Image 1 (tube, rainbow over the protein chains, first blue to last red):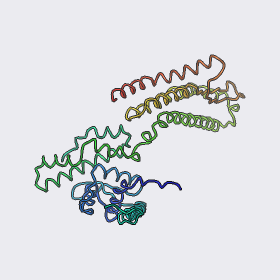
Image 2 (image 1 turned 180 degrees about the vertical axis):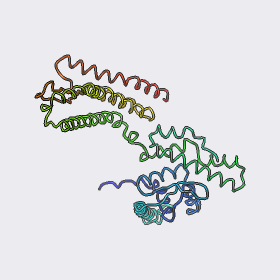
Image 3 (image 1 turned 180 degrees about the horizontal axis):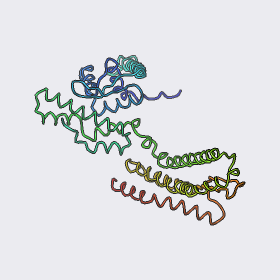
Image 4 (image 1 turned 60 degrees about the horizontal axis):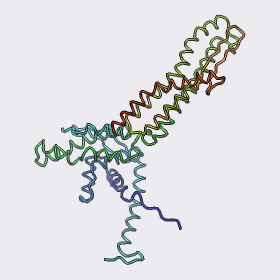
Length: 118
Length: 245
């Protein structure tokens, strides 16, 4: 039987997932997005500034986001919105995450062959 | 508003191969982000100076910020993602395509000229028309010389300049320079114009080390000349890389 491949994007996809999900609701700029992730995850996840912008750039390059510089209250910021391709990608990421979540939950609940040592 | 003291961040990212459009936007967004962090800290009662210091600390060090971008291959330029292909074979490919384009251009000019003169072939040209054609010989000679010597050198220097701004293995750059020196040296372009009405002219575009023996020397000399023009750039690049190491 062929060995199952590992999940290389196990944690790598989390920033993408969170960013796409939050941008689905409304367009935001980088600082706003970092604050929104912190609030939505009740401070459990804080994306560093060094993480969020490379992810945003990569998602835009892939066509999942589009950006524009917008002036709000006298300041201009680069705002990001999700595209149709981004919504599709979000759907795929949610699906992957749900499967991982189920797999981990079933292991923790002792559904695996070996009993969980506590 | 504080400006990031990350003067080297942009240079680090460009040398690491991140595409310029991503570099400039990243720096601009980090500056905007720093402004927002500063305002938020001031809103909590910090002084301006303390708020700026806190903002910069929260943003992270230039190294951390650089590594976050450099880890993303998908944001890098073609030359950064495929340095061997780009610097070794890229110049040769561009040179060959340029030669083909020049050949097509020359044939197009010749056919257009014939049509303008009302001639089916070059053998149909009148003495007056032939005189015009022979008057253009120096222009053609300059074009041929530029194609054989200037173009390989110019292309070589363009790629060298690109290599200067990026971390790249010197071997690929040397190989690229050698290839275009050889291709440039081994390419020949000649035009034999009809000397009298009724004679046909000929446009020859060739590549290779041509016999007999003296021609080999001519071709070898041209290749060595092309490489010699690029040699100072290669030496300069080698010194710059050694200084960075």
